[in-house]
Image 1 (tube, rainbow, N blue to C red):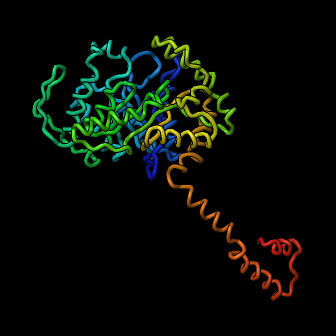
Image 2: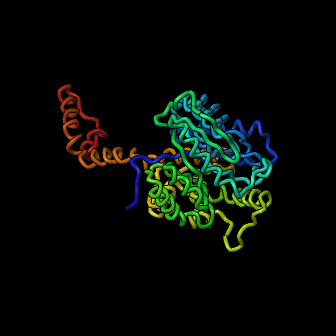
Image 3: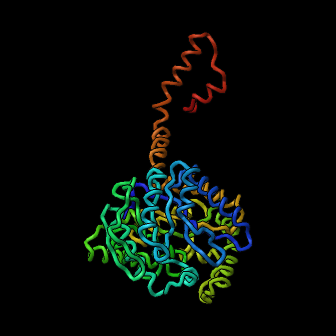
Length: 397
């Protein structure tokens, strides 16, 4: 049976991707302005990345972005998307996240991963073969600290001696925690082992959508083995989204920008040439389930399809992109907030039921009112205006 949350959450995953050559000061400020907009539009979550090289993803500290965004927003939750655990001493990172939990009054979320860019690990002298194991080790220690334990731990890359956090988390028992997952089994297995959420960040890649069911299976198997609970409510999917008033307009908006981004970022920067068997246009990406591009109705249908193919999840995050103008991007976020999110959050059915009730019973409901209006004219000795008489005869008021 497909899990359908009573209120699905929506938000963005902000790596961010800024074209090389742009003023970084302006770009970072625009990231914060975007989160302010989403907060006003009632989005639920915003996740900030951590990267240190390659020139595109400019946020080095998601914690700093969370602290700044918290001062400019009211209700949206703010997460590290994700903190690269092998790059940090686990105690320091845990301590800072608990501080953010307090500073945001419980709006902070903790997303973790092994580190996405090999160039980051290279500069830090970290062997790529150790990153996933270090992520798992660090997460286990951090969760113990969150729970108030005193930790003594000797590792080949960090040491703790009777370490304990001096302030308890603001959120009980601690803030939401999620592990980044791509095609490797390490992400879902680590999430299941520790009983935390999953951030599926590779849905946009070829084969990403059809692999989701297996992702959950691996996480559940690891959770069962570790005797941990796992909830689909804590599973978040990430993929690009762009909406417009028509499907054709939406595709025109982002097709060129999407293809240029894929070439400049994946091929020219990271050295990952495109698979010649995969069509590069955005319409083909939409067809294989790697993006949602179209109208609000198209988005609703795509989300329902994703629910069925995955077995159900608790949140959908749009992968923030700059494939078109800011005006069109803003319009897309507004369309999603107005017409898509409410469909999955229980906000439309009662409105539609109320409209249908009144429409189906208008003669019974409005008939006495029409009679009362007619009587008021008669009592006043005034003839009913022809236009009003015609309306009443048609059964309207």
